[in-house]
Image: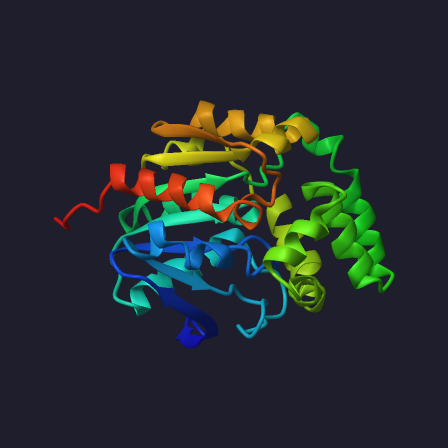
Amino acid sequence: MERALIQGVELEYQVHGNGEPVLLVHPGIFSDWFVPLLDQPVLASRFRLLHYHRVGCCNSSRVSGPVSLVQQATHARALLEHLGIARAHVVGHSSSGNIVLQFAAQSPDAVESLVVMEPALMSVPSAATSRVFVGEAMQRYRAGDRAGAVDLFLRGTCGPEYRVALDRALPGGFDRYVADAPTFFEQELPALQQWSFGEDLAARVTHPALAVVGARSLEMDPIWRERHEVLLRLLTDVTPCIVPGTTHLLQVENPVAIAHHLADFFAQHPLRPRT
């Protein structure tokens, strides 16, 4: 991967394909969750896919202290500027769904369209009742059991059999997540707790948006329906998308379906000339 020095941090990135730029912002420490999309012909043949590792993940810079979602969105904008990209389609999943919403709100001129896949919105009712496993995972992390903490978190978000799909699509990925666990438990989770998505911020997100949710996610936990409904209620130009047979792993489980949904959506909202 190539490296970009921006705002005092180094971010490693790679570019696949040609065409209108698409920025893929990975969730949490799960730095390779968009990799299954990079070689999908329907995307790579029509779009320039920019995949990067956020601070604290893989070989990008590690920073001490808090890292807010505002800072994460600022890094994303700075990376686009570093590459000479004025405007892009932007995709986020889980916690990075929150980041791309923040990105669109604070840098509206840099975003053409927005794809938000099962964002980690913390204000919905089920966040207080169904997320008990998050606190348990944090306890394991603080006790020194990084692998147990990551495993417990992924079981809670993706289902008890998540490793089957994960290891098939991304061999060795779990070990990478364990290595990056401090970033997740010490920076990402606190940042999510301190960020909120309400009417004020949503009013600044006027871009065409695709709200993606897995059909099996809707069956597993009410929180995914609640979060999906928040997007449909608050965003002004939003298209719902339910992907059959998928949990929170989405493109890890079915990259072909996700790639087609993204390509179709981007084609409906082509990059406008700068004015």
